[in-house]
Structures are given as structure tokens and as C-alpha cells.
Image (tube, rainbow, N blue to C red; front, side, top):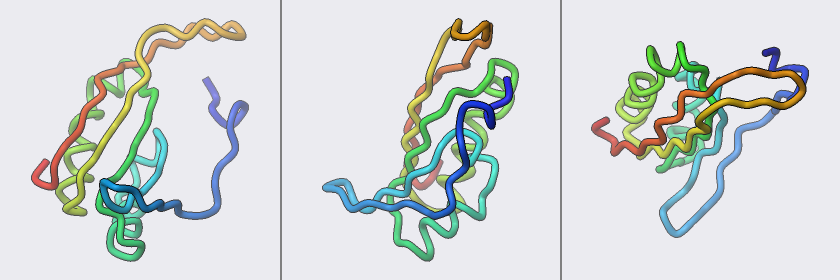
Length: 108
């Protein structure tokens, strides 16, 4: 799977006000870059970080929960992570996603 064939990268940080507080919006691979979440929370005032994802089985099992907990703790934000699960069979793609949607408080 080469994601760049199906998606283009963004060029700005996204926040939105909601009844739950200011939301910091990101996607899947962004989770690996703590600086992004520090900017969303410390510079843009995000209180809740949204992280929808489709992690592969191997990296999901190894990293998904750990990285999410880290982002919650280091930014002192709530983290809400929706996660696509199961096999994807479009365009010859036999990819399978980890799933395991979770939410964490600022203590991880």
C-alpha cells in the first residue's frame, strides 16, 4: 500500500470549536509526530485530539495504543481515536486494518 497514491498531504493545522472543547484534527500517520500535537494543543488551544486511523495489523498491535497514550500524556489533552477494522478489498488491495478504537484522558 502506498498511501500517497490515494491521498494528498495537508499544509495546515486544523482546529474547530465544539461543545466538548476545541478539537485538534489529524489523521492516521500523523500520530507518529508528537510535535504536531504539541502545536495543536499549546499553540492552537486544542483540548481534544481526534485521530481517525487505519493502522495495519503489525504496526497497530505494536504501536497503536502506546502512541495514543503518549500523545494524551505529553499534551495533557483528551484523545479520541476512531479506527477502521478488517480487510480492505478494493483495487486489488488485500490490506487488513487493526481497529481497536479508543479514547484516553490526559493521564493516558
